[in-house]
Image (cartoon, rainbow, N blue to C red; front, side, top):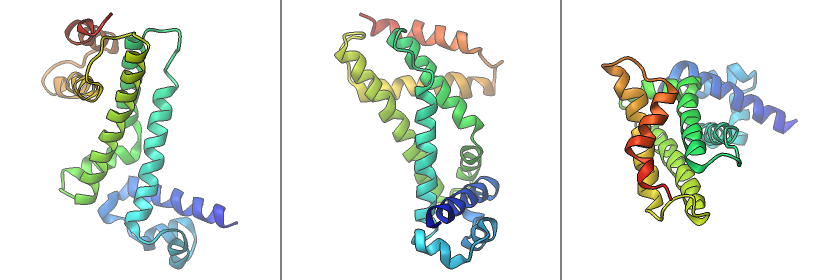
Length: 189
Protein backbone atom coordinates (compact mmCIF):
# COMPACT_ATOMS: atom_id res chain seq x y z
CA UNK A 1 0.00 0.00 0.00
CA UNK A 2 2.83 2.42 0.87
CA UNK A 3 4.49 1.72 -2.49
CA UNK A 4 1.22 2.58 -4.25
CA UNK A 5 1.01 5.88 -2.35
CA UNK A 6 4.65 6.68 -3.05
CA UNK A 7 4.11 5.97 -6.75
CA UNK A 8 0.99 8.10 -6.67
CA UNK A 9 3.01 10.96 -5.15
CA UNK A 10 5.78 10.57 -7.75
CA UNK A 11 3.26 10.47 -10.60
CA UNK A 12 1.46 13.55 -9.28
CA UNK A 13 4.72 15.43 -8.78
CA UNK A 14 5.89 14.50 -12.28
CA UNK A 15 2.67 15.86 -13.68
CA UNK A 16 2.91 19.06 -11.63
CA UNK A 17 6.57 19.71 -12.52
CA UNK A 18 5.79 19.09 -16.21
CA UNK A 19 2.78 21.41 -16.18
CA UNK A 20 3.92 24.20 -13.87
CA UNK A 21 7.69 23.84 -13.65
CA UNK A 22 9.89 23.38 -10.64
CA UNK A 23 9.45 26.81 -9.11
CA UNK A 24 5.65 26.89 -9.30
CA UNK A 25 5.12 23.33 -8.03
CA UNK A 26 4.26 23.14 -4.35
CA UNK A 27 3.92 20.16 -2.04
CA UNK A 28 0.29 21.18 -1.53
CA UNK A 29 -0.34 20.86 -5.28
CA UNK A 30 1.35 17.47 -5.36
CA UNK A 31 -0.68 16.25 -2.39
CA UNK A 32 -3.90 17.40 -4.03
CA UNK A 33 -3.01 15.75 -7.38
CA UNK A 34 -1.98 12.54 -5.60
CA UNK A 35 -5.11 12.62 -3.45
CA UNK A 36 -3.06 12.24 -0.27
CA UNK A 37 -2.36 14.43 2.73
CA UNK A 38 0.69 16.67 2.53
CA UNK A 39 2.21 14.73 5.45
CA UNK A 40 2.11 11.55 3.37
CA UNK A 41 4.58 13.08 0.93
CA UNK A 42 7.01 13.76 3.77
CA UNK A 43 6.95 10.09 4.80
CA UNK A 44 8.65 9.36 1.46
CA UNK A 45 10.59 12.56 0.68
CA UNK A 46 12.26 15.12 2.96
CA UNK A 47 11.46 18.07 0.73
CA UNK A 48 10.59 19.21 -2.78
CA UNK A 49 14.22 18.94 -3.88
CA UNK A 50 14.41 15.25 -2.92
CA UNK A 51 11.12 14.54 -4.70
CA UNK A 52 12.35 16.40 -7.78
CA UNK A 53 15.61 14.42 -7.67
CA UNK A 54 13.65 11.14 -7.66
CA UNK A 55 11.68 12.23 -10.71
CA UNK A 56 14.76 13.42 -12.59
CA UNK A 57 16.58 10.16 -11.79
CA UNK A 58 13.66 8.20 -13.25
CA UNK A 59 13.56 10.47 -16.31
CA UNK A 60 17.28 9.94 -16.94
CA UNK A 61 16.78 6.18 -16.68
CA UNK A 62 13.90 6.40 -19.18
CA UNK A 63 16.11 8.43 -21.53
CA UNK A 64 18.99 5.93 -21.47
CA UNK A 65 16.51 3.05 -21.80
CA UNK A 66 15.10 4.78 -24.88
CA UNK A 67 18.62 5.05 -26.31
CA UNK A 68 19.26 1.37 -25.64
CA UNK A 69 16.18 0.37 -27.64
CA UNK A 70 17.82 1.56 -30.87
CA UNK A 71 21.14 -0.23 -30.30
CA UNK A 72 21.62 -3.22 -32.59
CA UNK A 73 24.62 -5.45 -31.90
CA UNK A 74 24.81 -6.31 -35.61
CA UNK A 75 25.43 -2.70 -36.63
CA UNK A 76 28.76 -0.87 -36.52
CA UNK A 77 29.53 1.39 -33.57
CA UNK A 78 28.94 4.64 -35.46
CA UNK A 79 25.48 3.66 -36.65
CA UNK A 80 24.52 2.70 -33.11
CA UNK A 81 26.06 5.87 -31.68
CA UNK A 82 24.16 8.04 -34.12
CA UNK A 83 20.89 6.21 -33.51
CA UNK A 84 21.30 6.40 -29.71
CA UNK A 85 22.21 10.09 -29.66
CA UNK A 86 19.40 10.95 -32.01
CA UNK A 87 16.97 9.00 -29.79
CA UNK A 88 18.23 10.89 -26.73
CA UNK A 89 17.67 14.20 -28.50
CA UNK A 90 14.18 13.08 -29.55
CA UNK A 91 13.46 12.11 -25.95
CA UNK A 92 14.53 15.57 -24.78
CA UNK A 93 12.12 17.23 -27.19
CA UNK A 94 9.22 14.84 -26.55
CA UNK A 95 9.31 14.45 -22.77
CA UNK A 96 7.01 17.01 -21.14
CA UNK A 97 9.19 17.51 -18.06
CA UNK A 98 12.32 18.10 -20.16
CA UNK A 99 10.45 20.66 -22.25
CA UNK A 100 9.28 22.49 -19.13
CA UNK A 101 12.76 22.40 -17.59
CA UNK A 102 14.33 23.89 -20.70
CA UNK A 103 11.70 26.66 -20.66
CA UNK A 104 12.23 27.29 -16.95
CA UNK A 105 16.01 27.33 -17.31
CA UNK A 106 15.66 30.65 -19.12
CA UNK A 107 14.15 32.10 -15.94
CA UNK A 108 17.38 31.32 -14.12
CA UNK A 109 15.99 28.83 -11.61
CA UNK A 110 19.10 27.38 -9.96
CA UNK A 111 17.61 23.96 -9.20
CA UNK A 112 16.52 23.59 -12.82
CA UNK A 113 19.91 24.67 -14.17
CA UNK A 114 21.58 22.10 -11.90
CA UNK A 115 19.23 19.37 -13.10
CA UNK A 116 19.88 20.16 -16.76
CA UNK A 117 23.63 20.01 -16.11
CA UNK A 118 23.08 16.63 -14.43
CA UNK A 119 21.03 15.37 -17.39
CA UNK A 120 23.76 16.42 -19.82
CA UNK A 121 26.43 14.78 -17.64
CA UNK A 122 24.43 11.54 -17.64
CA UNK A 123 24.09 11.68 -21.43
CA UNK A 124 27.82 12.30 -21.82
CA UNK A 125 28.63 9.43 -19.44
CA UNK A 126 26.36 7.14 -21.45
CA UNK A 127 28.08 8.09 -24.72
CA UNK A 128 31.53 7.88 -23.12
CA UNK A 129 30.80 4.32 -21.94
CA UNK A 130 29.75 3.32 -25.45
CA UNK A 131 32.97 4.85 -26.84
CA UNK A 132 35.08 2.95 -24.28
CA UNK A 133 33.42 -0.31 -25.33
CA UNK A 134 34.05 0.49 -29.01
CA UNK A 135 37.72 1.22 -28.27
CA UNK A 136 38.11 -2.03 -26.34
CA UNK A 137 36.54 -3.94 -29.26
CA UNK A 138 38.88 -2.08 -31.65
CA UNK A 139 35.89 -0.70 -33.56
CA UNK A 140 37.38 2.78 -33.30
CA UNK A 141 40.84 4.24 -32.74
CA UNK A 142 42.02 4.90 -29.20
CA UNK A 143 40.91 8.38 -28.16
CA UNK A 144 39.90 10.34 -25.10
CA UNK A 145 36.39 8.90 -24.52
CA UNK A 146 35.17 11.80 -22.38
CA UNK A 147 36.30 14.47 -24.83
CA UNK A 148 35.04 12.47 -27.81
CA UNK A 149 31.63 12.00 -26.17
CA UNK A 150 31.45 15.74 -25.49
CA UNK A 151 32.36 16.69 -29.06
CA UNK A 152 30.04 14.13 -30.63
CA UNK A 153 27.09 15.20 -28.48
CA UNK A 154 27.71 18.92 -29.00
CA UNK A 155 27.96 18.38 -32.75
CA UNK A 156 24.56 16.69 -32.71
CA UNK A 157 23.10 19.54 -30.63
CA UNK A 158 24.54 22.06 -33.10
CA UNK A 159 23.14 20.25 -36.13
CA UNK A 160 19.74 19.47 -34.64
CA UNK A 161 18.95 22.64 -32.69
CA UNK A 162 21.32 25.47 -33.51
CA UNK A 163 21.28 24.98 -37.29
CA UNK A 164 17.46 25.11 -37.32
CA UNK A 165 17.43 28.60 -35.82
CA UNK A 166 18.52 30.07 -39.18
CA UNK A 167 18.11 27.25 -41.71
CA UNK A 168 15.74 24.52 -42.79
CA UNK A 169 15.91 21.53 -40.40
CA UNK A 170 18.24 18.75 -41.49
CA UNK A 171 16.90 15.25 -41.99
CA UNK A 172 18.25 12.55 -39.69
CA UNK A 173 20.07 10.96 -42.66
CA UNK A 174 21.78 14.25 -43.52
CA UNK A 175 22.87 14.74 -39.91
CA UNK A 176 24.32 11.22 -39.89
CA UNK A 177 26.13 11.95 -43.15
CA UNK A 178 27.60 15.20 -41.78
CA UNK A 179 28.69 13.56 -38.51
CA UNK A 180 30.44 10.87 -40.52
CA UNK A 181 32.04 13.38 -42.89
CA UNK A 182 33.34 15.85 -40.27
CA UNK A 183 33.84 13.70 -37.22
CA UNK A 184 33.71 9.94 -37.45
CA UNK A 185 35.97 9.10 -40.37
CA UNK A 186 38.93 10.28 -38.33
CA UNK A 187 38.18 7.68 -35.64
CA UNK A 188 37.39 4.77 -37.96
CA UNK A 189 39.75 1.81 -37.93
